[in-house]
Image (cartoon, rainbow, N blue to C red; front, side, top):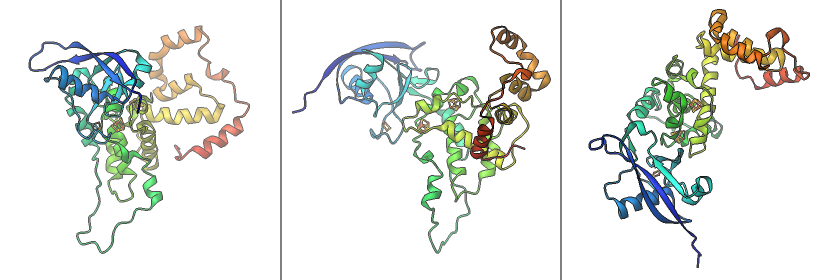
Length: 326
Ligand code: SF4
Ligand code: SF4
Ligand code: FES
């Protein structure tokens, strides 16, 4: 017979009812947890054994519907997949349960996801194609063509990446990683006819791909191990390939980055800022630049060293480049 290990854990749980409470508060529940328990088991026990008014979302219990996502000690988790014992290993015996974004909490773990779904809908997350009303044969998608989607089809719209993204927090207009991943998914589908339409949407300044700061939080947060940032980079490439890139700070940053590596084998950070922001724009960074210079953190463009493996670096850039900027 299986020998169950049991641990006593204190769960500090975010509580808030938008219709009754002036401000949120935290309630503590101490429960005995077994090695098989996932976070959803604890949410269920709080509701069934402690307080029937406690609210949270769940449906499939199999990591498919994406509805049970919350944060534990600020780590985004899918409640029905995350084992409590694994969380104890990271955070110890006090676990804090909070909704994905406390600013949008409606009731306990339930957040208003309207912002997430609106942005998701903005990228036209569906197949747009000419449908043959009476097709004589099926539309065959080869294995190679299906692989081009790179598992972006496995997204369960849980929103963990969206609510962990610093660019979403800082900029209300940014579409966010889940919507952009979905734009990549349909743009890469060989049956779809709306690639340019979608690229024009994701190429918009402030809301599109250029506002991603490449921090990889979305990849860390995804319970399906998808990497939305990689798909965002591929959307950058599609924009250049289709000649839709506009002359702005972000596109000049991409061009300047590649030029710097080809020229030196290293990144010339000072020149990259000047190239991206222009001679006038660079002036606003003067205080930081002087501070960096004083501390030996900035090399002037004329002092930039060259990599001794520059020819090798150039070959690597050439092999790995999928688009020509100029
Ligand atoms: S890599 Fe980009 S999309 Fe992903 S979390 Fe960071 S800013 Fe957001
Ligand atoms: S990309 Fe991952 S984290 Fe983001 S919504 Fe899809 S499944 Fe959730
Ligand atoms: S309940 Fe459906 S993913 Fe957790």
